[in-house]
Length: 60
Image (cartoon, rainbow, N blue to C red; front, side, top):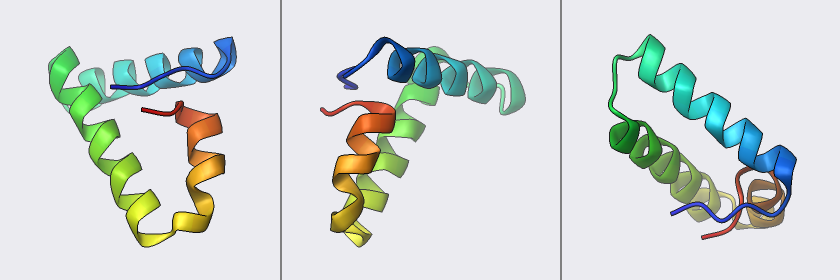
């Protein structure tokens, strides 16, 4: 799903997953799918942001 470019991006994704699990009562797989869906949406609508998104959340 998410490839991590740096240790920091992995920590950020992990934190986002934990927040989604806690705040929205999602399972681990559900939270990861939410992030993947949001990432795909942003890159589809704003392709010029793909590099920034990949740096923040890691490439696929």
